[in-house]
Length: 423
Image (tube, rainbow, N blue to C red):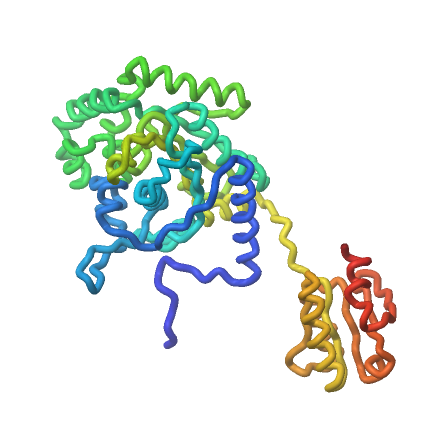
């Protein structure tokens, strides 16, 4: 038996990769419009970064990270998410000292979590995310949400729901935390071992428990919205006012708890309502994290961001039966007969590619009929037919594959001919 791909990973082959490239390019174009610049961080980082940055009580740190000792006996982890590495780079490279603030960054790349593979949930998955660091203005919270929504909509998705919540500031969260402890502690033995551990450390995590989410105490737990102080209430009111003014529909869900410890104030998720999308409807999520930079060793710096799964985005497109406008054709395919024609076509192919055309030829010495079939499979717009007689005359026969029209031109006019027909 041959070597097989590891469980929870995938090969993205030609025919499928073009969809990935298309949505990634759309994401990059959206970031340019909104003023975000790309950052690329290492695929592996110090384990401590994620313990401190993601949160010691999170499922990611406790159960899902790929962690190993390197040859220097350092604890290294394959990155499970993109925010902590981005903030680490922001802090280490002192981007907070740049004159233009806030610092607005985006990333696209693979992440790694050891969890049970299922549709849209892989052990190696691809994330697109943005981070805006340096502003406490609720307007930038809405900018981040708007970018996410507009990206989905630009790809044609319509069955979307934006869900928002406020986790409040430190004071609000402290008061809510105490209320949750009082609420759960008398019956905490009815919950899973993880929830029992989290009761004192981070009871908010209990609300996000996958095992006990139907428990009555979770269903009627104290709402964070009842513990917001005046500043937090005003902040949340401003976020909602911006969304309303911009025509972005939303639902307030007081039970929305993001799976990472560093969030405060605004938290949000975008769901797919598409029929057949699956039981897990979340497409993306994010929120504000005003204490994360300090936790990683930087100065007091507010931040907000979101991340989406490319896999789940493609699933949503499929569920809504949206076909992306993928260009899978080429400009010219050489059909040749004879050694001289094969030699000449190789030189001409190089010239066409240098001139900016997509072009190809046969490399298997197939008969001309087989070469025309190959041109069809590659959706060639033109075929350039070269044989011994064409070489002697210094011409090439150009066939329009849509109309069947054939024109003989001088070989040295090939580039200008295609320019006139295609550009």
